[in-house]
Image (cartoon, rainbow, N blue to C red; front, side):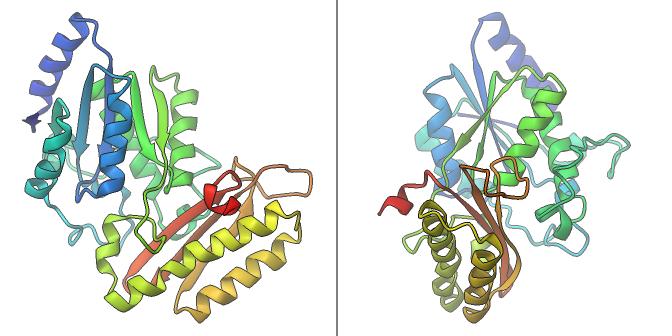
Amino acid sequence: MKLIQTIPELKALRARWRAAGERVALVPTMGNLHAGHLSLVEQVQTGADRTVVSIFVNPLQFAPGEDFDRYPRTLADDLAKLDPLAPDVVFAPSVDEIYPQGYPIATNVVVNGLVERFCGEFRAGHFVGAATVVTILLNLVQPEQAIFGEKDYQQLLVFRRMARDLHLPVEILSGPTVREANGLAMSSRNRYLSDEERASAAVLRQQLVATGRALRAGHRDFAALEQAARVQLRAAGFAPQYFNILSPELEPATSQHSDFVVLAAAVLGAARLIDNIRLDDPALAA
């Protein structure tokens, strides 16, 4: 496993891989790695000759007043966690390396129609910053595949639409959400939760499962299901931002749809938690 922190060194290595005809997979992260990140590395390693894990806390995707300055930067611990998986490269550039002219930058990637709603409504500029830096990373690494976690469902759709619209020569893969024992989706921001809040956080997953089961049972009063879930979240101490039943493309659900995604975001203490559920989730059959 090689640590690279400069673009010229990365490009030189990528050129050697290209000359050898090797397939490359990219796992973009912001570090502070947990089991969910590691599962993405394992997933892409089965179909690639070379694996690159990027670790970069991207200032462009933090809305004003968010936690960019205090976001955990744990490179030494991240390298220790990755070592048993032995990815070929960990690319951990500085902010100045990615944005040598400073930031914000003049060029941005905007996926209209997907970046304004849901998380985009509450995190101004987040998806534009995320799409821009992922485009930069894809240009630098030039992978045949890149993988993202399904916990960030809206972000996953943003990247897939971006790759399709721009004809990027990369396949966007996804990996299932990895959860803590109580069902809470693993996230680097879970460390902001107190022990009491971490226990209460399980209610978000519970409400998603309950709503998913109701949909599978044929209930189609979407507004009532959404409202019932919000009531339960507030009772557990959450401040819900949204809890919506949608089509898989994140359009408003109708009775004509046969498949749904339930998308949720809520604040608990100092942590903003997001999660979602699809009707093929194994928990709905339990």
